[in-house]
Image (cartoon, rainbow over all chains, first blue to last red):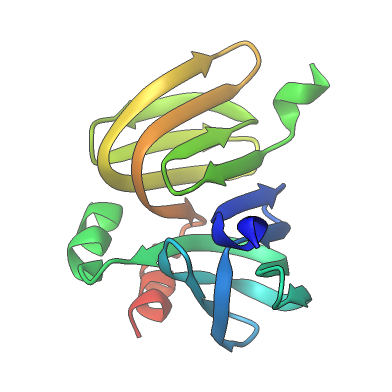
Length: 86
Length: 86
């Protein structure tokens, strides 16, 4: 299905995050979600996170909570983090 | 204007990022943007970033490039980074 291939992220008011193009949910807890998407692996960090929706066939994940960061892992996270923290 | 108050983030295919509720663009270069928004300070990191649109009155910023991370600075970035890197 074409809709499942496109990776989009929509964050509303830092409280609700909708992600498309999700292939797998690798792990999640109240502080972090790890997802495999059609555009790479991503990590969402925050507080009081919970999964509001997961439609595996459509590749859609909705997360509610206090979103703190959305980071893609391209195999060079430490350099990226260095820039984030400068 | 009500539209300027709401902070939303829409990322399309990791290549185009539209942000609303932007109060100020603090700095930007090809690797990082720092924005002040109605929901806090945020940093966007990536590669080959450039500003496609900046409508100060409407509070809208559009960034094109390879988006690597979107991080909010709530005064505890190092703890957050620790979770991101675990």
